Image 1 (cartoon, rainbow, N blue to C red):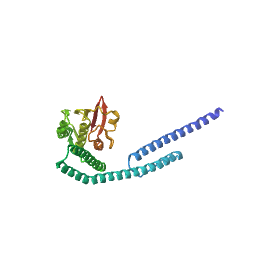
Image 2 (cartoon, rainbow, N blue to C red):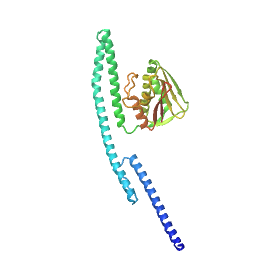
Image 3 (cartoon, rainbow, N blue to C red):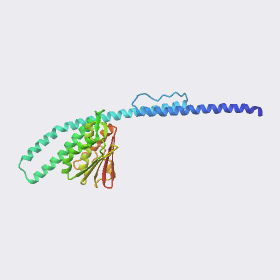
Length: 293
C-alpha cells in the first residue's frame, strides 16, 4: 500500500493542477465575456461576442448572450426610428401652426381697435392670453425638436460670471415687474468653462423664466467658487413630487402661469449635452435648481 502512495499523490497533484488551470481559464473567459458584453452595450456596433475559450458551456453562454444582443439591437433600431418619426411629426406640426397663429394675432390686434363692451374686452384678453400660451408652446416644441437633432454644440471658452450676469440683466425688468427682488451672490474668482454660449444663455433664461412662474416673491442666484450655480426661490405650492417632474417633457404644474412644460426639459437636454449636470430639489418650501459644468 505504501508503495502506491507516491503514485496516488502524483495523480492527485496532476488533477489539482489541471483543475486549477481549468478554473483559471474559465475565470479568464467569464471576464472576457463580461468585458465584451459591456463594450457591445456601450458602443453602437454590429459585432457580437466572440471568445477564445473552447469550453462548450462558456461558448453556449456567449451564444445565448448574442441572441439577446440581436434582440436588443432590433428594439433599439425600432425605438430610434419611432423617436425620429415622432420628432419629425412634432417639428412639422409646430411649424405648420406658426402661420395660423400669426394670423390669429393679427386679427386680435384689429379687434382690440374696435369698439366693444367691457365683457367683450374681457373675453378678448382671455383669448389673447391663451393664444400667447399656444404660441410659446409651438415655439418650444419646434426648438426642442431641433435641439434633439443637433449632435454638436459650438463650444468656446466662456466666463460663467459674465454669462450669468448678462442673463440676469436681460430678465431684470421682467423679474421686477413680477414683483420679485432678486438676490445675486457671485464669487470674485473668474470661472471659465468650454461651452456653447447660446446654449448656456438658453439654459439660464429657461431657469429664470421658471422662477418667475413659480416664485412666491423672491429669487436668489449664487455662483460658487467651484463653478456650481444655484437658483432658488420660495414655491409653497410645489412639493417634492412635482419638483422631481419639472424636467419631464410636457409636464406642467397647475400653478405655473403660462407654463408649457418644455423650458426646463430643454435646459436639461442642453446641459447634459455639454457634459454638465442639472437637478432640482425642494427644501423647506423652496425650489432649488443646481447646475454644474
